[in-house]
Image (cartoon, rainbow, N blue to C red):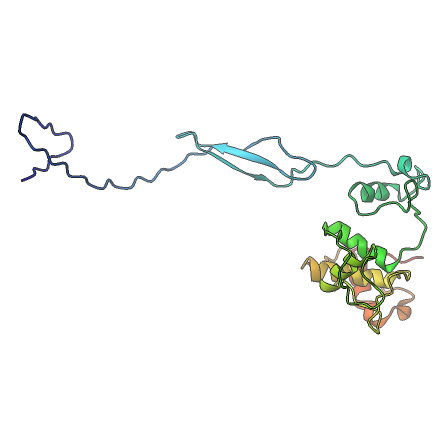
Length: 238
């Protein structure tokens, strides 16, 4: 019969000798890595965070993960050079620079921004879609509103906003896209966007007092107006 030999034993093989090899399962060896510090790979872009890698000093194994918060800042567009109606010393210029650079707003023409023009409800909803990076290229969608037909530049954005609880109509199945958006409507949309879409809560950052024209704020908008005021997003007008 077969003879089992210990590890390290010597077997002499001669003519007419039959050797039987018995294979045994080796015990599992747990490899413990010894990693050093992560080293940033300097590969961030304007559209994505970079990565960082750490290396095991024992076996050389490398582990790479995303280096969060390293996305490069874009070079801001100088809106005064781009638009003839944005003065270089205007108080709002830096905000226009940022908004245009990041695609939140576009101009009203190739060389005008129209900073003092009233914003419509459709335009304000489009801003939320732009901020969120929503694909609004397909305008052939059913918005659910009788006055927001397929094919309009704002149709996709309004449809998205309604489905996500950011906007409601104005009654009778209408959205009134070309009406001027009011300050209280803006507050409601902002709160709905943050709470219903982003699933976040506005932080209280200031002690907002009651507005002198509080009685003129619609009941359906009052809670949102004061949430925005306490978060420092809106101030009074005088």
